[in-house]
Length: 241
Image (tube, rainbow, N blue to C red; front, side):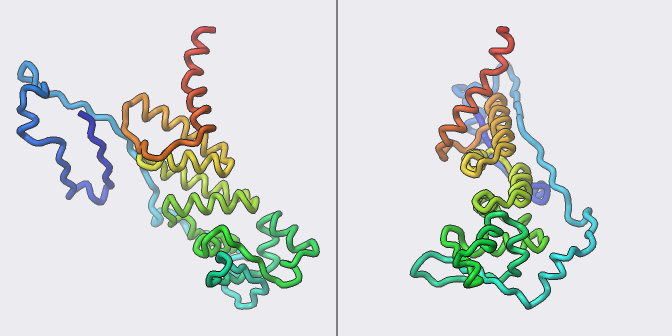
């Protein structure tokens, strides 16, 4: 019998978890007790997250000072066509400095330069706001859930924001768990994140080798499955050589 269990330090003192009913435990057909012995084997992983209290606050950067100013001269309009738009304001030179894609838009004779306005229809306003905050050296992205981080990773990939992409990859790596590894693995392929994909491959092989249950409801990307299988057989091939 295999039972997954996830809990945090905050819940450790109060959590109660039923492994099985007493009647099932004592049922001789289940063979839980043999020769008057009952053996429990446990496998698991420990995850540690540093506390915000332990981190020193760095001195303010120029971008953080600019965040407080009200003279932003560029608008990012977010929303699908025929829907209510959300406007996110930003300094034009800040936008251009953080992404070569945005920089090209503002350097060439495109409508974004003429109108001082950019339209984004394939990401929600919350993700765009978080990205803009990052442009001003704010770290609100660290508080996002896995779904939001994946969207932000895709945003960073599309607009070639490599430093943001690297930061989001790091947070996602920390958040990988058996219940979300398939989702994050697929995201690593979609966002061309080699580092994140390699970590997911190694962790998934570890889960499989240790017989740790993980969420199999999400269909894995075919390219990821190929790399997973190739990595799994590498040790065997090396031994044959």
